Length: 118
Length: 338
Length: 167
Image (cartoon, rainbow over all chains, first blue to last red; front, side, top):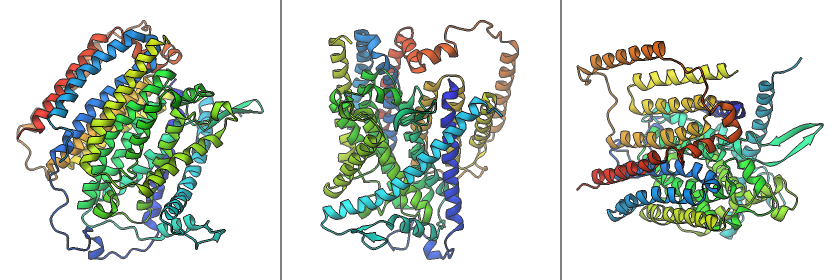
């Protein structure tokens, strides 16, 4: 069975090689005339001020955590869906309980405004 | 001299991989041209009509663009983090190409007793592989924004990541309905099951959710906030030039082709014709072109979402809809006793 | 053949893991951790567990590490110059590493490796399908842990809202 994945490994090697080759070609072709204005960060022509690495909104963090939780749900959903015809009604009840518990959290986030970005 | 079996597998795979990459890159180059014509027609303009023009179509335009990209200066902004700034476009394009490892392109044919399969790998977890590769693609954008160390790039990368992870949930859940019918994660088996009835007939809601989420995944209008030319000047790509910029662009178009191919494979029968008519790669290509045309059409006609609307739509509309779709499918399958 | 691929992934994993520990820039460290996860996925495929492999990439490399990167960006810490480190950190870390190494050696030396194979051999998995085998176990024998996971996720959801929405 692992040998089924050999072509994928071959493809991984090829695409990494392609990306690396493109980056090398990019670095050796073309002119090279840097000057301070060209190398400064683009800010619509204004003189740049401050650093771009400032602290970001906590909402991104919130979204990322919620994504992890629902991503785990998806990973459970896939084997369940594949086996669903064998599991039948029993499978439906199993997953209904699982999702019902998660939905409590989902409603809680909704009520607390966790999905609002204004 | 006899070759070991695994070596034959690898050589066969390498040939297929090279063919797929060449086809995808050519497809990408000419899609940029098609997009310019489609948008031009929508806006009553002419579109490119100079480079190698014949019959009103500039056939050599993509080649001219490619040469121009290669000859442009490739520079590292002074404030950028050199390593991540350089790696980011490479990661983006590598993950975009990798998705094609599991997509079946044509029914198997037998030549001189040797069966040729028109896919690179038929694995049992193909669909999850696609999701996994897609989630790795996010690194290209995050690192591009962080590595550029530019305020527009940073904002674009953050917005893009938050948007992609939000819609990835609906995308993943929209496909669950198909899996419940097919009972397999292998795209090859899923396509074979659709030789007569396409799954879109059983999963219309899942199909619509998938397509909307897919458009958001590839950052196309009306979900193109990460790039929003008018406010973020191309977002995470702002500081990029030369082939590095071209690689990001390439990744974006290849992702468009990929999500269209997945939509075709999961819902419209992939290379299968309608009601079993003449199966073959031409159907897959037609279906991909159809989806891409719809995306271009949307670009030409729809205004952009506001960011709070975008996030609200993903989490409060698409996600519950996708869950409801799964449960309706489950209940129906239990009731009809399959 | 499998041995070559095993050593390839193992070597990448070890080198990237050293990078996670050794690199001072937190973003580089996170990136190395992603490489570690992906090479682990390769090792799982070699063990006939591709479902675990893709789940590993999806959840660890695709979701949890994205959160790490967000946290790094959220805090934008200056690159560690090695001076601000707590004095007791290094001896403590070395102590733990030593204890882990001893434990590893002891386990390997004393463990009674099962001579009989279980019922889920690679041949069985190849025939029934890896996702099907995982699913069948998960939704019958391990039903209670599966349902408990949802409670765990619920606690996490509530926790993050309480932390993030505190005014």
